[in-house]
Image 1 (tube, rainbow, N blue to C red):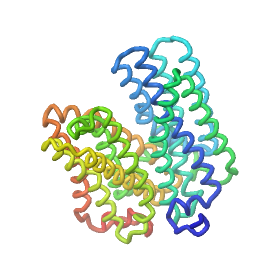
Image 2: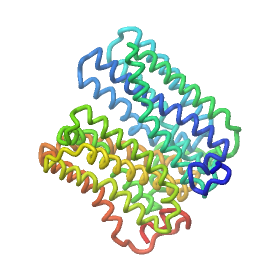
Image 3: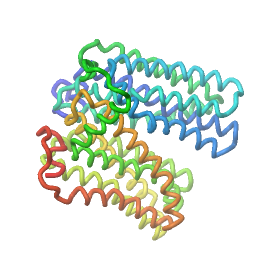
Image 4: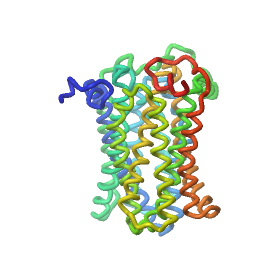
Amino acid sequence: MSIGNAPEGTIRAALRYPAFRRLLAGLAVSQIGDWLYNLALVALVYERTHSPLWAGITTAARVVPMVALGPLGGVIADRFDRRRVMVACDLIRLALMGVLALAALTRPPVMIFPLIAALATAAGAPFLPSASAVTPRLVPDADLPGANAARSAVTGLGIIVGPALGGVLLLLGTPVLAFMLNALTFAVSALATASIPASKAFRPGGCGRRPAGMLRDIADGAAALRAHPQAVRLVGADIVCSLVYGMQTVLLILVAHRAGLGLHGYGYLFAGIGAGGLLGTALASRAARCPHPRAVLLAALAAVGLPMLLLGWVQAAGVHWPVLAIAAAGVTGVGAILVEIMTETSLQRSLPPEVFGRAYGLALPASIAGIALGSLAAPVLISLLGGTGALVACGAAATGYGLLLAVPRGRPGPAPAESVLATVDA
């Protein structure tokens, strides 16, 4: 089947549009570089300090700025031409990767490395809100689920390919190559975005308005979300999936040992999650065409939660079924990516274009904060409930939220007929 006659809503159908293909190409290259650079950065810091604490601080430095500055990134996406914003984000990060490479060639205070990482994350804060706001203007509404699935697929590809390539570069003896390669990926991303012809697709919907204060703009984004209660519930589902993922970063170490995989099996379990995510992007178009999207959402949440309950049983029974453990982890990846794609598509369809960036700039950091919260909650749950109890609590979070959504809430507010939001609470 060629791209030209691909069914609506599929990744193939979304790839029919040259402007979106260029945007996606830049995203794909950049994602691979980001995951490659993250591995090299943490390895460099650990090599110089031999401190897990500094390694943790370095990882946190790449996450916290997105949580803290995400709302500001959304404001920028709604105030300025989004094509220029994305190119500027890439160029600033390119320069910072060059600075990081120079620092790696010398021996500055170790705090320089997480500081540069934090600045790079902060510089990219407006990028994702801009890219998400632009996507529904580069493809028709019918192919929007496929476009979002394609964006999720390149993220999954980056998670798999980036660390593998980073490991090869580290074998060559220096992280500098990884930092320079990541700088090159930002150059490619900037060129790909700049090559898209300038058009009204990149102009924020409210470009003719008089800019309000920063806090007022953020408040407008929050108000837009509150005006769509169904959207808030879907964002809640995405946050719950992020919470589960954060808990998995700790709990799957226990599962790997109990399943007979050993510590190296921890990587296999996360590879299973990544593979499941790629499978989920392939299923997204079929899910979008399902006449009962509410049931799809509930099934996706069950796919996230129930395997964790199963892994709790594996933990309690001491069963050495490594294939079962990897498969269960993979199923959670399928469910989580479906929730992510459904949430993103619904936000794009339901929120007013002129305030989308600000609303998305609140939803995205909330989801990322869920990962951090989950990773901090898991050790506490282990100390209180034991490994089995923590796994059960993790699975119960997703399945319980799904059951909460299953409770009828009366008639939904007005929303586009083709949106998942129109039927989530029917």
